[in-house]
Image 1 (tube, rainbow, N blue to C red):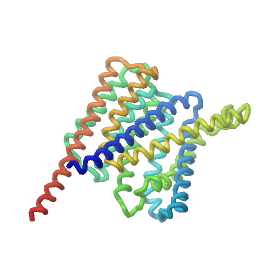
Image 2: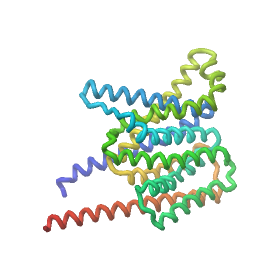
Image 3: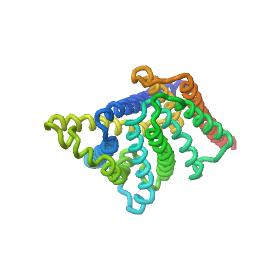
Image 4: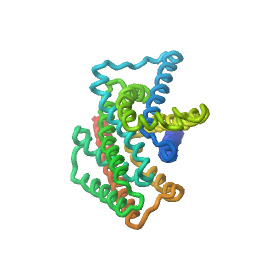
Length: 336
């Protein structure tokens, strides 16, 4: 036991460091996007730039690792790419695009609460894809989260229906996105176990998906914008691009930190961390962001978080039972 203590300490410290990075990048990106979109009303175009920057960073890292460390570069066949990767890429692009678009209409607190319903949709799609088994107890999770969201939006002074529909649609697509991503990660034959390789292959189809929406919805306004193409001077245009680049880098770091938390620990740890991250985000939104809340909204917040906590607890019980069964089988083998 004592011999393993230093290793356990290193593992705990590493896990805590990864979770802190995940908290930092996620919360910073949420509030940064909300601030940026107040003065630059082109969230779809910005999301498209984020995708292109991520693709450039991952392509550079892959090539650097190939030249310096002689690492094998992963390339997928077109059949695998279209059949396995494209559905995940399309759903990821729509999830990110609609989420960022909703920031033009709703507060950070409503956004955070609405996105928490993604757990319901992940659960639903996981059952549909037979990644999880349906249990009657899961109904209570859906009821708590849905009821909490209903109470949170009831008579809210900052409620906007269109923004709410956007973020709820993003949450629904996000459920599909993570269920599809799980099917890719569980298939070793696909060959995208490395986060850099996964992100590299997702970005092109994500860009193709978001480009028509950005051009159709924001194209004319962006072309006439005084912040980019019709800027008074080159300095103003470069400053706008610099601000967008900061968000791109934050988005890239957030994606990496999410993956490495799961890689170092498990998706359960990421879910537990997500609860406290949402509490931190909501606390900042109410204390520093100026978001308003009444008693009914607060009750809804508590009910929704209770539903998320219950879901994580149920997942923890499943993991504990599986680990217990493995230990029991191992003991039986040793006895034999």
